[in-house]
Image (tube, rainbow, N blue to C red; front, side, top):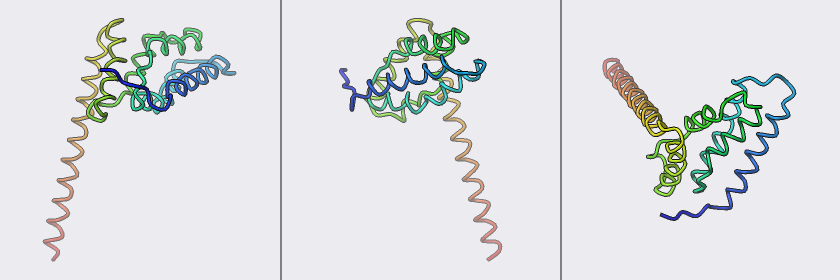
Length: 152
């Protein structure tokens, strides 16, 4: 399947990554792992937008750039898996987005393995938490309806 990047998002993505890497590299204070992971968290909307704009970015290169900017304080593998932790569930994407995300995940799977398994566990946990929250809401609504009937 051939997917075309929408709205030249690859250019926007590269500028965003380079900007954050510049900021990490020139950070005036002491760099620490939490700071680097905080940057990855801040980049979450950028990663999601890349997938939604059908840009299969090279996650290995992004991990390497961020690691280098941090003077290798955090290993590129750790950064890459941290990025993956911010990926959406496939069911939340259109078909092209799912394909693009699969291409990105496949890069990690080929280099280190375990990426898909980690994502599947995370997605299953999110789904379970959503179902539990939905069940709790339903139970709460039913209890409120019973109270209203008794009061009437």
